[in-house]
Image (cartoon, rainbow, N blue to C red; front, side, top):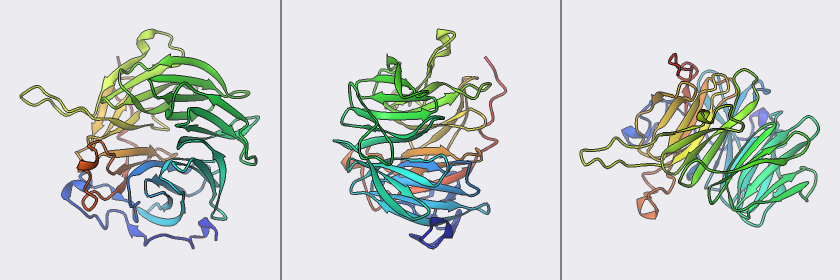
Length: 369
């Protein structure tokens, strides 16, 4: 069955904002709620590319599934289809034409989901769980980039069972991002490797993280004038984000800022939470961060100022993304194991995915340095 015919669904569609369950703090921002959310923690969210006439959202989760919804103009989400792996799904990406979704899993494989036929086939293999997957569309080649805990970065032609290129890394891949012609990979041990993808993938620069603690997420940003990638934001488990330029014209262009921390109580002790995901707005160039503190925040890196912080959710915010037009911000509240097994109450901690109308909230600040 074709996904776009709407015949394959995995749940009943519901209007945004309906079926809000749980405590008052499960949706303190009163945002639109996605129907039929995953059954376990949500690891990744990705909107379809702007090449499609409709908007679709995919989510990968620890229940081994990837789900796809159609997001309608009137605020309805319609569950369309889902695919299953043999282990938790850690990352997803879309092909540039919006016909395929790539899914990376703890089962050590990556599958390509053809949305028109609703069939999935394996296109990549590693010796350990696959943490990241990205589709690369270059003028002279197209391929899938996969990063794994087996300490390799591999590039695949989807028609071949062997990688075009396999790069040995110093450590396990913890995070990665691609914006052609740049790729950034963060590995365990705080190393960052930047690749240039022009003719073929090759290492451009290797550096130590500017953050003292383990990094968890990375997102590439464009130069506002040229619309080409020039740097990245890196988030760590210690409530901090680094803004790093690949070739800074001035070393002071690079800076870090604190986020996802509680206000210090009278004892002066501050709770510090992990930054779980970072996403840049496709139009304004501002950014969102989400954290284990159960909040999302919007920032203007150029004015070095915070634009907005959400109310606190009763669960961590595990991932986020913007749609291609930049008018919808999607984010997932789900347990991220930041408080270990003893902090997990399955009956109370049901995952939710929310969507927020966000275009104006992400406009750049009027303040300038």
